[in-house]
Each structure stands twice: as C-alpha cells, then as structure tokens.
Image 1 (spheres, rainbow, N blue to C red):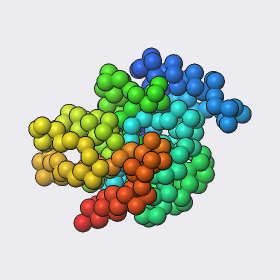
Image 2: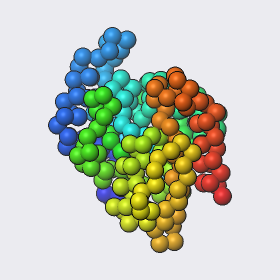
Image 3: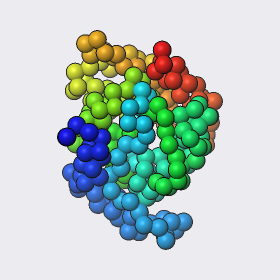
Length: 230
C-alpha cells in the first residue's frame, strides 16, 4: 500500500529532488568531521522516528549535518538531540535519556519526531522551494500518524506545518498565528481537531544561552501529554 509509514520512509530515503541538498549532504558524508572521521555517514534523507500511532508529533527543522545526517535517525547524535531526548525521558515518552546511534535501543512511546525538510541543509537554512518539494512527505506522515497534538520546534517548522495543514484542508486561522514559545493554537477539519504547541528549537543557540531551559521544554511536553490524553 502507498499509504503506509514503511512505504513513506522508503520514499523519503530514496529522494533526490533537491540538487543543492543532495550535494551538501553527500559532501558532508565524504569529508566528515574529525571526531567522526572513522564513521560511515548516512548522508541521505532522514525519515520520521518514533511511535507509528503517536498522539503527539514533534516537528523540527531539518537533520543536522553531523547529527541525523550521520546517524540516519532524527535528532540522534548531536547536542540538540541530547537535550530533546533527555526531556522526553523525563516526561515519560522515551525509554532512555540518550540518543547516540540508530541501534542504541531507544524507543519512543506516544510520541514521534519528524521534520518539514528531510535532508541536512547548508547553514541549517532550507530554501522555500526545498521546503515545498519536501512538504508532501510531511503531509503524508500527518495523515498516517493522525496525531492529536503537534509540538513545533522553532519558527521555520511552525510556518511549514501551518502551510502543510492548510494544503490538507485544515481550517488554519487567517492571518496565520505567529510562532512563540508557549503558543497554543487549535485547528479543525470537519469534526477533527489538532492542537499546535510552539516551543523554541532545541538548537545549541537556544539551549546554551538559556533561552530554552530543560524546565521550559518539559512543560511543553507535559502540556502535550495532557492534551493528547484529555
């Protein structure tokens, strides 16, 4: 069946639609960072990871060049993932507090991680065209997982998600709700409803400066759990 996560994941991994991103992710995988010079990089698009029927979906930005682009799993192998999965473990979504490699035994329950762009972009900055080319993957994942709550990490993911939801027929307010940490927006489609929660991205730019603290992230995840179970 076309509409299955396994098929979607295979299509994501095989995608070569964006020449700039293909060239960058593969160059990073060839050159490698000195700390990982003996590792084989994934260097392909990264599929979603987590519970296939998760009531909570986490939407980031794109794989990190030496994180998910190296390990092949969302938010795995970098400081951003360390911060995120530690919070998921504290709030009961993750089986362990660390996420170092694709075979480290980590499992997620009730939550799934994805991104609007599946390839590592130069300077962590996908272009609008690259986001649009990748949006059908996010749209299909939303339909297949059918979450009740989406935690959106950062303004890029927020705007990308709102655009995708509108394309899927969700009633997104006009003008679009602005991103903010702690923002809470409900959208509807027929009798279905979906709650979006804004959260500062777990990038080192935010976590090292204290703009996003562990307590702030825990509060968002606990709010997501309460909404998903309510």
